[in-house]
Length: 310
Image 1 (tube, rainbow, N blue to C red):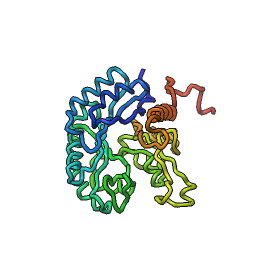
Image 2: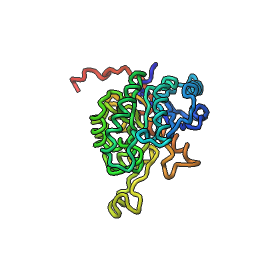
Image 3: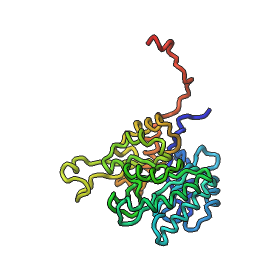
Image 4: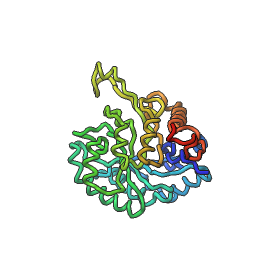
């Protein structure tokens, strides 16, 4: 029997840059993860992605685990050597996604460094219109991660897709149906934005979800403000932050989202280093509970008599 609970799968990200993705999958696959997002940082280092995809699929074996999304994080809009590697990495991931079983590639938009956000739009349109067509020809969708990478509207180094006002500008420039968002509540909380209404407004553009949360210290904000001497927010692993993941997953289901929530670890100030996988497995179980817990088959019909009499 199929498990409709798994229309939203809970998984995690795994680094692929060092060529150890398949080994890592084999190491942690039996912990209960239902999906993986292999990701590259700025460069694929010339890896044979077709071969890497084959090895990742072999590492999964007959387990009920999917790879829906590949990550390629860097700045493909600029022209330094690593930026050019990132752009080529995007092309290679798009071309080879099917070897992983993936139908989505996610990462930063890139940005013209040190300039106001709007100054990146012409280059954004040039690069991403071409990549969107390349991806569409291969049945692949592109999802922009919503992390500011310490940038803001006035300046930054990596990404323009970190603010809903920027999304409006971006998707007016590129109207391709296969361009969307890799969304997570963490980065919205960092901006003190309520994440839940975003799901309702932007649901059709949410192609992939990262499992990352945040803790906002409102007492620090009241005394010291934001972006001052004292940190007012911490990025957290789900289950340790402020977000109500039951509500988030409910809103995603109501909006018709099906896909993965892949945990993005390595940010939690407490559950890191030797506690990293402790935190990630807690997040895995927390998100499964927020998804509704164990699937109990039902008829889908009202079984209490005539509902008009109640």
